[in-house]
Image 1 (cartoon, one colour):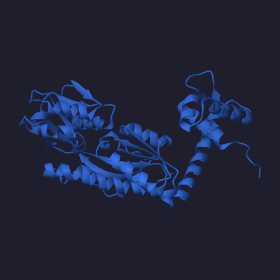
Image 2: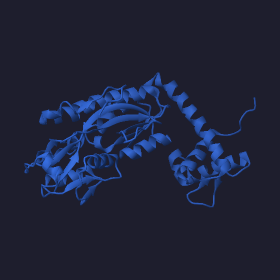
Image 3: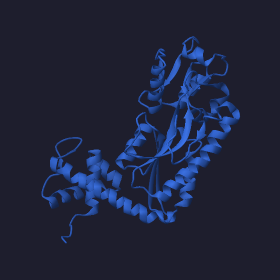
Image 4: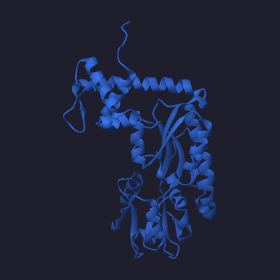
Length: 327
């Protein structure tokens, strides 16, 4: 059998340069110096006897040959990660690395305790935690930049990812506590207050706008926010009303006494929060993350919110882990 002379580190650098279009970004991702990453890439191209990138372009792009090599390198790396994951799954304490990205909705009540539990379960692990919007998390999982992602299910199922349903988070109306409008009055645009919208670049904003179109509800687009906290602060101040979810209400703890929630009128709808992975993931880590999340979400998010508003009990709930929910 002919023995390959290619270094695994060369291939890792090549893969990261192809992903980011930059040797500098690849160096940062792999923990190498810029000069070392550049040397690895040049050595790989020399060993193969052909350029893998168009070095004159920024960002750098793979050549036709580079694209062929990249396909095989991606497949090989996925197999190596799968082998490593399965070997480590038997003993969580020996895991060496785990990267996780979590939706911003859980950054205050859930994320800190999840990080603590994982650090205790995997003392030898280099743990990387990111907070991102859902659409960015799904892209990170697809690219392999993170092992596990906690995000809202997109409008069209992410069939290329493995999904474990986690939480049913129904949409509700958030009004200033000083107002006594009905939900129907809000959707009819008869409150004198503007609808405060989530950014349409976010999955939650897209989901809300799609529902409004289905109901043929047309309201002026005066305010649009990426920040849930900013939007809830404006509702609390009486500057408008919003369509949101109990999870986002729970996150905005400092404004809860100034905000009232109402059930969404007509046909209600909900979003599903799930845990997403690729096939090659450490199963022991996934089970630990999933079980810990369920406990934390129940005690820190669902129970306090339902205690305040008992009418949410039927719809704001954890989902069976292995069966896709009906919403």
